[in-house]
Length: 275
Image (cartoon, rainbow, N blue to C red; front, top):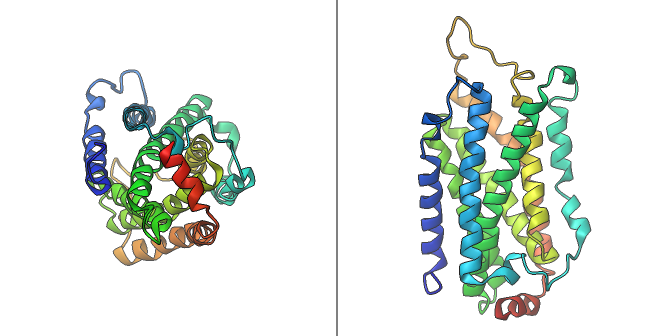
Protein backbone atom coordinates (compact mmCIF):
# COMPACT_ATOMS: atom_id res chain seq x y z
CA UNK A 1 0.00 0.00 0.00
CA UNK A 2 2.86 2.39 0.75
CA UNK A 3 3.96 2.28 -2.88
CA UNK A 4 0.50 2.25 -4.44
CA UNK A 5 -0.98 5.32 -6.10
CA UNK A 6 -3.54 7.14 -3.91
CA UNK A 7 -5.91 6.94 -6.88
CA UNK A 8 -5.64 3.15 -6.77
CA UNK A 9 -6.13 3.12 -3.01
CA UNK A 10 -9.12 5.43 -3.38
CA UNK A 11 -10.75 3.00 -5.82
CA UNK A 12 -9.96 0.07 -3.52
CA UNK A 13 -11.50 1.95 -0.60
CA UNK A 14 -14.74 2.56 -2.49
CA UNK A 15 -14.84 -1.14 -3.47
CA UNK A 16 -14.32 -2.13 0.17
CA UNK A 17 -17.10 0.21 1.27
CA UNK A 18 -19.38 -1.15 -1.45
CA UNK A 19 -18.71 -4.74 -0.39
CA UNK A 20 -19.29 -3.98 3.28
CA UNK A 21 -22.59 -2.28 2.45
CA UNK A 22 -23.68 -5.52 0.76
CA UNK A 23 -23.16 -7.69 3.86
CA UNK A 24 -26.58 -9.28 4.57
CA UNK A 25 -26.93 -8.35 8.23
CA UNK A 26 -30.67 -8.23 7.62
CA UNK A 27 -30.63 -12.02 7.56
CA UNK A 28 -29.50 -12.01 11.18
CA UNK A 29 -31.46 -9.07 12.57
CA UNK A 30 -35.16 -9.71 12.05
CA UNK A 31 -38.47 -8.00 12.77
CA UNK A 32 -39.09 -10.44 15.60
CA UNK A 33 -37.11 -8.26 17.98
CA UNK A 34 -36.81 -4.87 16.28
CA UNK A 35 -38.85 -2.42 14.22
CA UNK A 36 -37.94 -1.73 10.58
CA UNK A 37 -36.44 1.63 11.63
CA UNK A 38 -34.28 -0.04 14.29
CA UNK A 39 -33.16 -2.77 11.92
CA UNK A 40 -32.11 -0.21 9.32
CA UNK A 41 -29.97 1.80 11.73
CA UNK A 42 -28.54 -1.14 13.64
CA UNK A 43 -27.32 -2.54 10.33
CA UNK A 44 -25.97 0.87 9.30
CA UNK A 45 -24.08 1.13 12.60
CA UNK A 46 -22.54 -2.31 12.16
CA UNK A 47 -21.44 -1.64 8.59
CA UNK A 48 -20.00 1.78 9.38
CA UNK A 49 -18.16 0.34 12.38
CA UNK A 50 -16.46 -2.10 10.02
CA UNK A 51 -15.49 0.72 7.65
CA UNK A 52 -14.18 2.75 10.60
CA UNK A 53 -12.09 -0.24 11.67
CA UNK A 54 -10.54 -0.42 8.19
CA UNK A 55 -9.74 3.29 8.45
CA UNK A 56 -7.95 2.82 11.78
CA UNK A 57 -6.00 -0.16 10.45
CA UNK A 58 -4.91 1.72 7.31
CA UNK A 59 -3.73 4.73 9.33
CA UNK A 60 -1.72 2.50 11.69
CA UNK A 61 -0.32 0.37 8.88
CA UNK A 62 0.77 3.38 6.83
CA UNK A 63 2.03 5.27 9.92
CA UNK A 64 0.28 8.48 8.94
CA UNK A 65 -1.08 9.45 12.37
CA UNK A 66 0.50 12.91 12.23
CA UNK A 67 -0.88 14.03 8.87
CA UNK A 68 -4.21 12.29 9.50
CA UNK A 69 -4.89 14.29 12.65
CA UNK A 70 -4.51 11.52 15.21
CA UNK A 71 -1.11 12.39 16.67
CA UNK A 72 -0.84 13.83 20.18
CA UNK A 73 2.30 15.67 19.06
CA UNK A 74 0.19 18.34 17.37
CA UNK A 75 -2.18 20.52 19.38
CA UNK A 76 -5.75 21.31 18.42
CA UNK A 77 -5.47 24.72 16.76
CA UNK A 78 -7.96 27.26 15.40
CA UNK A 79 -10.76 25.57 17.36
CA UNK A 80 -13.27 28.26 16.39
CA UNK A 81 -13.21 26.98 12.80
CA UNK A 82 -14.95 23.80 14.00
CA UNK A 83 -18.00 25.96 14.76
CA UNK A 84 -18.53 27.00 11.12
CA UNK A 85 -20.71 23.96 10.22
CA UNK A 86 -23.02 24.73 13.18
CA UNK A 87 -25.30 26.57 10.77
CA UNK A 88 -26.12 23.14 9.32
CA UNK A 89 -27.28 22.00 12.76
CA UNK A 90 -29.68 24.93 12.86
CA UNK A 91 -31.01 24.19 9.38
CA UNK A 92 -31.59 20.58 10.37
CA UNK A 93 -33.39 21.62 13.56
CA UNK A 94 -35.83 23.85 11.66
CA UNK A 95 -37.27 20.74 9.96
CA UNK A 96 -38.72 19.40 13.23
CA UNK A 97 -38.74 22.35 15.64
CA UNK A 98 -42.51 22.83 15.30
CA UNK A 99 -43.38 19.17 15.83
CA UNK A 100 -44.48 17.46 19.02
CA UNK A 101 -41.20 16.11 20.39
CA UNK A 102 -42.93 14.43 23.34
CA UNK A 103 -43.88 11.49 21.10
CA UNK A 104 -40.25 10.65 20.31
CA UNK A 105 -38.98 7.22 21.28
CA UNK A 106 -35.72 7.85 23.18
CA UNK A 107 -34.18 4.52 22.19
CA UNK A 108 -34.80 5.27 18.50
CA UNK A 109 -33.22 8.72 18.92
CA UNK A 110 -30.13 7.26 20.59
CA UNK A 111 -29.87 4.59 17.90
CA UNK A 112 -30.07 7.25 15.19
CA UNK A 113 -27.37 9.30 16.96
CA UNK A 114 -25.12 6.25 17.28
CA UNK A 115 -25.58 5.36 13.60
CA UNK A 116 -24.88 8.93 12.46
CA UNK A 117 -21.72 9.13 14.57
CA UNK A 118 -20.61 5.78 13.14
CA UNK A 119 -21.06 7.21 9.64
CA UNK A 120 -19.12 10.34 10.58
CA UNK A 121 -16.19 8.41 12.03
CA UNK A 122 -16.12 5.84 9.22
CA UNK A 123 -16.14 8.38 6.40
CA UNK A 124 -13.74 10.85 8.02
CA UNK A 125 -11.17 8.23 9.00
CA UNK A 126 -11.24 6.68 5.53
CA UNK A 127 -11.35 9.78 3.34
CA UNK A 128 -9.72 12.51 5.42
CA UNK A 129 -7.58 10.32 7.66
CA UNK A 130 -6.27 7.87 5.06
CA UNK A 131 -6.89 9.09 1.53
CA UNK A 132 -6.17 12.80 2.06
CA UNK A 133 -2.93 11.95 3.84
CA UNK A 134 -1.79 9.84 0.89
CA UNK A 135 -2.72 12.49 -1.68
CA UNK A 136 -0.88 15.16 0.30
CA UNK A 137 2.21 12.99 0.41
CA UNK A 138 2.00 12.53 -3.36
CA UNK A 139 1.41 16.16 -4.33
CA UNK A 140 3.28 18.25 -1.74
CA UNK A 141 6.09 18.85 -4.25
CA UNK A 142 3.52 20.38 -6.63
CA UNK A 143 2.86 24.14 -6.66
CA UNK A 144 -0.81 23.48 -5.92
CA UNK A 145 -0.05 20.42 -3.84
CA UNK A 146 -2.22 21.32 -0.86
CA UNK A 147 -5.22 22.13 -3.05
CA UNK A 148 -4.91 18.89 -5.03
CA UNK A 149 -4.23 16.89 -1.88
CA UNK A 150 -7.54 18.06 -0.43
CA UNK A 151 -9.61 18.15 -3.62
CA UNK A 152 -9.00 14.60 -4.89
CA UNK A 153 -10.06 12.89 -1.63
CA UNK A 154 -13.16 15.12 -1.57
CA UNK A 155 -14.01 13.94 -5.09
CA UNK A 156 -13.56 10.31 -4.05
CA UNK A 157 -15.76 11.04 -1.04
CA UNK A 158 -18.45 12.40 -3.33
CA UNK A 159 -18.09 9.46 -5.71
CA UNK A 160 -18.56 7.01 -2.84
CA UNK A 161 -22.07 8.41 -2.34
CA UNK A 162 -23.00 7.14 -5.80
CA UNK A 163 -23.10 3.72 -4.15
CA UNK A 164 -26.48 4.84 -2.83
CA UNK A 165 -27.84 4.16 -6.31
CA UNK A 166 -27.94 0.52 -5.24
CA UNK A 167 -30.71 1.31 -2.74
CA UNK A 168 -32.13 4.61 -4.00
CA UNK A 169 -33.68 4.97 -7.46
CA UNK A 170 -33.99 8.77 -7.07
CA UNK A 171 -31.04 9.53 -9.35
CA UNK A 172 -31.10 13.36 -8.98
CA UNK A 173 -31.10 12.99 -5.20
CA UNK A 174 -28.09 10.65 -5.23
CA UNK A 175 -26.15 12.89 -7.64
CA UNK A 176 -26.93 15.84 -5.39
CA UNK A 177 -25.57 13.92 -2.42
CA UNK A 178 -22.36 13.28 -4.34
CA UNK A 179 -21.99 16.98 -5.20
CA UNK A 180 -22.54 18.38 -1.75
CA UNK A 181 -20.40 15.58 -0.30
CA UNK A 182 -17.54 16.99 -2.38
CA UNK A 183 -18.24 20.46 -0.96
CA UNK A 184 -18.28 19.35 2.66
CA UNK A 185 -15.43 16.91 2.08
CA UNK A 186 -13.25 19.71 0.77
CA UNK A 187 -14.10 21.92 3.74
CA UNK A 188 -13.41 19.13 6.24
CA UNK A 189 -10.11 18.42 4.50
CA UNK A 190 -9.02 22.03 4.90
CA UNK A 191 -10.33 22.07 8.46
CA UNK A 192 -8.18 19.05 9.31
CA UNK A 193 -5.07 20.84 8.07
CA UNK A 194 -5.95 24.01 9.97
CA UNK A 195 -6.87 22.36 13.29
CA UNK A 196 -4.60 19.26 13.30
CA UNK A 197 -7.38 17.09 14.74
CA UNK A 198 -9.63 14.54 13.04
CA UNK A 199 -11.89 13.53 15.95
CA UNK A 200 -13.79 16.84 16.25
CA UNK A 201 -14.45 16.73 12.50
CA UNK A 202 -15.77 13.17 12.70
CA UNK A 203 -18.11 14.18 15.54
CA UNK A 204 -19.30 17.26 13.64
CA UNK A 205 -19.92 15.12 10.55
CA UNK A 206 -22.00 12.70 12.59
CA UNK A 207 -24.03 15.46 14.24
CA UNK A 208 -24.81 17.06 10.87
CA UNK A 209 -26.21 13.74 9.70
CA UNK A 210 -28.15 13.36 12.95
CA UNK A 211 -29.89 16.74 12.77
CA UNK A 212 -30.77 16.28 9.12
CA UNK A 213 -32.12 12.76 9.71
CA UNK A 214 -33.86 13.44 13.03
CA UNK A 215 -37.09 14.16 11.17
CA UNK A 216 -37.01 10.60 9.85
CA UNK A 217 -37.80 9.15 13.28
CA UNK A 218 -40.98 7.04 12.99
CA UNK A 219 -42.91 9.25 15.42
CA UNK A 220 -42.07 12.40 13.41
CA UNK A 221 -42.15 11.00 9.88
CA UNK A 222 -45.17 12.26 7.96
CA UNK A 223 -44.75 9.82 5.05
CA UNK A 224 -47.36 7.09 5.30
CA UNK A 225 -48.42 4.21 3.12
CA UNK A 226 -51.94 4.15 1.70
CA UNK A 227 -53.59 0.72 1.62
CA UNK A 228 -50.17 -0.89 1.94
CA UNK A 229 -48.84 0.91 -1.13
CA UNK A 230 -45.74 3.06 -1.28
CA UNK A 231 -46.04 6.87 -1.36
CA UNK A 232 -46.69 8.50 -4.74
CA UNK A 233 -43.53 8.90 -6.81
CA UNK A 234 -42.18 12.43 -7.19
CA UNK A 235 -41.86 13.64 -10.83
CA UNK A 236 -38.32 13.83 -12.21
CA UNK A 237 -38.41 17.63 -12.65
CA UNK A 238 -39.55 18.07 -9.05
CA UNK A 239 -36.69 15.81 -7.94
CA UNK A 240 -34.19 17.94 -9.84
CA UNK A 241 -35.55 21.23 -8.49
CA UNK A 242 -35.60 19.82 -4.97
CA UNK A 243 -31.95 18.82 -5.34
CA UNK A 244 -30.78 22.39 -5.90
CA UNK A 245 -31.51 23.48 -2.33
CA UNK A 246 -29.08 21.06 -0.60
CA UNK A 247 -26.31 22.12 -3.00
CA UNK A 248 -26.89 25.77 -2.11
CA UNK A 249 -26.89 24.92 1.60
CA UNK A 250 -23.49 23.21 1.47
CA UNK A 251 -21.87 25.52 -1.10
CA UNK A 252 -20.73 28.09 1.52
CA UNK A 253 -18.54 25.44 3.14
CA UNK A 254 -16.74 24.86 -0.14
CA UNK A 255 -16.22 28.61 -0.60
CA UNK A 256 -14.90 28.99 2.95
CA UNK A 257 -12.58 26.05 2.32
CA UNK A 258 -11.19 27.76 -0.78
CA UNK A 259 -10.47 30.86 1.30
CA UNK A 260 -8.88 29.03 4.22
CA UNK A 261 -6.68 26.76 2.10
CA UNK A 262 -4.68 29.77 0.89
CA UNK A 263 -3.54 30.41 4.47
CA UNK A 264 -2.24 26.92 5.16
CA UNK A 265 1.45 26.61 5.94
CA UNK A 266 2.96 24.09 3.51
CA UNK A 267 6.05 23.60 5.65
CA UNK A 268 3.85 22.59 8.56
CA UNK A 269 2.29 19.87 6.39
CA UNK A 270 5.68 18.69 5.14
CA UNK A 271 6.83 18.39 8.75
CA UNK A 272 3.84 16.19 9.54
CA UNK A 273 4.55 13.99 6.53
CA UNK A 274 8.21 13.53 7.55
CA UNK A 275 7.14 12.85 11.12
